[in-house]
Each structure stands twice: as C-alpha cells, then as structure tokens.
Length: 173
Ligand SMILES: Cc1cc2nc3c(=O)[nH]c(=O)nc-3n(C[C@H](O)[C@H](O)[C@H](O)COP(=O)(O)O)c2cc1C
Image (cartoon, rainbow, N blue to C red; front, top):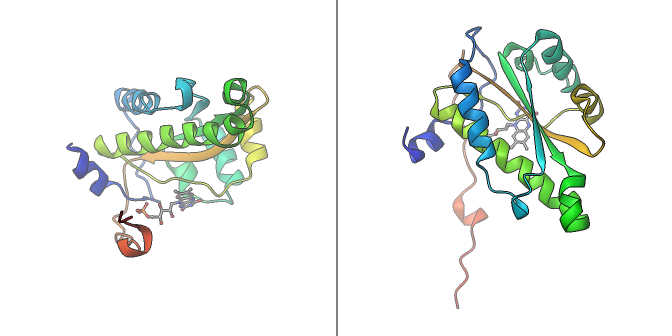
C-alpha cells in the first residue's frame, strides 16, 4: 500500500475478529518496528509478543480492563530499555531517548499493520508494574505502549484533528 494511503487507512480499532494474524504478517510488522530510527542506533527498546490467552488477559487486567486487548489475536508490548540508552546518554537516554526509541518502533509497527490490512489500537492506559512483571525481563525495562493487532470487526467514524493553525507555527524570518 502506498505510504499516504497507509496513513489514511490507519485508525484505532477496538473490536477484532477471531481470525489469526498470519505468521508472515507478524514477522513483517516486527521487522518494520526494528527498522525504526533510534538514538545512536542503540535500539533501546524491547518488544514482547503476547499471543497466549492467559498473557493477554493479564494485559487486559493491567490496562483498566479494556476488553479489546484480549480479543485481539496478538498484542505487542513495547518497553523502553533505560539502562541501554543511559549507558551512552546518561539521564537524557533513560529519561527521553529510550522512550522515543520505543515509541517510534511502536508507530512503525502500527503503520506496518495498517499496510497489511490489519488494524490496531495504541494503548497507553495501563499499570506499568504488572506489565513489567509479565515481561520478566531485566531491571530498567519500562512498558510504554501496548499494541493489540488483528482484523477489524468494526468500522468506526474517523476521529477529527485540531485545526492546523492551532498546531503549526510558521516562523517568518
Ligand atoms: C499515547 C497514546 C495512548 C493511548 N491510549 C489509549 C488507550 O489506553 N485506550 C484506547 O482505547 N485508545 C488509546 N489511544 C488511542 C487514541 O484514543 C486515538 O489514537 C485517538 O483518539 C485518535 O484516533 P485514531 O487513532 O482513530 O486516529 C492512545 C493513543 C496514544 C497515542
């Protein structure tokens, strides 16, 4: 799908069909996530792929019981890797770059899913501790986003955007 069409196609979907996400598509999504730019090319993030029902239920519980989370066939959990970025960039790495690295990777994954005819919803409302426990990873891995992915079972109205005049500023020299 052409880039601008992908941007247009993506919208948050909060109801998924039972149809599985094909392994090749999941692989392509993860590859796109890894193609994202990152500070110093440190790729200071981790991605946990959750497909088993128990894991997805735990994510749903941690995320204020948003029910579409365990309805999706697959949920990606994005973590910032604070120590990895801090090793080169100190506080700016742990406090900013690793968040940005993980965020960009998640955005790439979301657009890749859209390009493949899949849908998703970025989830930021969750309690980080239980999600971090689920990952069972080293200290310093902080979950920053959940991305449930699947085939849409709804076609919601498009959300609007603020007028560009409110968001953009054109500096005149
Ligand atoms: C940082 C962030 C956190 C979000 N958290 C949630 C969430 O917890 N639950 C949810 O249903 N949607 C969540 N969303 C999705 C937004 O509600 C959605 O992107 C926004 O309303 C614009 O709609 P659109 O994605 O369809 O363009 C989140 C999006 C972002 C970027």
